[in-house]
Length: 130
Length: 130
DNA sequence: CCGGATCCTCCTAGATACTG
DNA sequence: CAGTATCTAGGAGGATCCGG
Image (cartoon, rainbow over all chains, first blue to last red):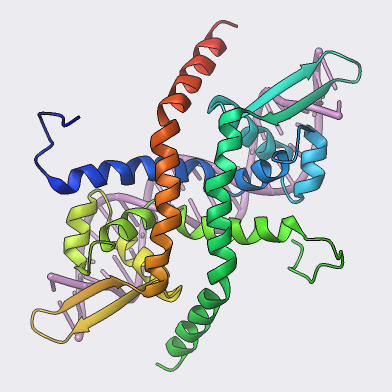
C-alpha cells in the first residue's frame, strides 16, 4: 500500500487524490461534456440529434468532445453503414456510473447557486465602493 | 447566444439543471480550484503556504483563483495588517459543503481511473493500426 | 510577505468550406 | 448525415517588475 519512496509525507497521499480528481475534472469540466452525458443518460442518440438538443455547439467541438469521451471509454460510437450514414452514440457502463457523481454535484449546484450569486453581487458592489 | 429565459415548458427542464451544473463545473473545473479547496479543507492557510503546497502554480493564477473563490463566497480572505503582511485563506461554510460532492467525484476517479487509462491505451493502439 | 500591473505566448474554440 | 481540414481571433496562463 505505502510506496517505500514517498510515503512518509502525510500530505502527499491526499495530494495524489487531488491530482486524480483534477484529471477527472479536466475531462468533465469542459463546456460540453456534461451536456453530452446528460443527453445520453436517457438513451443512445445520433450526432445531429445531440447537436440540436444541446444547442450552441459547433460540429467540430461536438466531434472532438465525443471522440475524447469515446477514447476514455465513457461513450460508444456505433456506425451503421447505410445511406445516408447513421452514427449512434451511447453511454458505456462506466459512463453510466459517472451520472451519479454528476447528480451529486448537480444537487449541490441547485442548493447553493442562489447563495453563490448573492455572494457575487455582494462582492461586486463592495468593489465598486473603492 | 440565447439569454437564460424562463422555461415555457411546464415539464422539468433538465437543460436548466445541466446549465447550472455546467456553471458550477466551470468554476471548479479549472486547474487549481480543486487543489485549493483540498488544501484549505484541512484548515486556514497563508498565501505562500498554499503556493508551496500546491506546487506549479504561478502567484498570478493563485491570486486570481482565490479571488474567484472569494467572490463566490466559498473562501474568506483575512488580512492581518502586520509587517510583513499576512493573509489567511479559509473555507466558508458553503465552501465546506463543496468538499462532499468533490469527495464523491474523487472516489469515482479512484475507482475508474485505471479503467479509463486502459480504454485510452486500447483506443490509441487501435488508431495506430489504420 | 502579498499581490497588482504589464507584457507576451500559446492553445483552442468557433466559423467556414469541403468530402464520403 | 456525419464528419474532416483550415484559418483566425481571443483568452488563459506564465514571467517579470514593482509597490505596499
